[in-house]
Image (cartoon, rainbow, N blue to C red; front, side, top):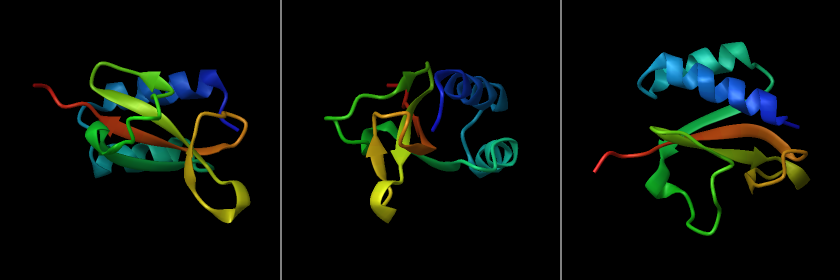
Length: 90
């Protein structure tokens, strides 16, 4: 389970790290070792699923781990991780 306050803390930490890259990902993993973190581009996320939390430079999506398979979820009760999806500037 990921409560909204934790998601806000993750977003704040990711923002303070600057560029979303492997270094940032490792920093987040160290701060929240029980959660899974993934980086991608927001264009790679399915259009049918809105972000759980929108930020200026990235969006956060939840990863669920029900039934032994990882998948995107909107249910914080099922969440075991976060996708940080960078938003391109056009």
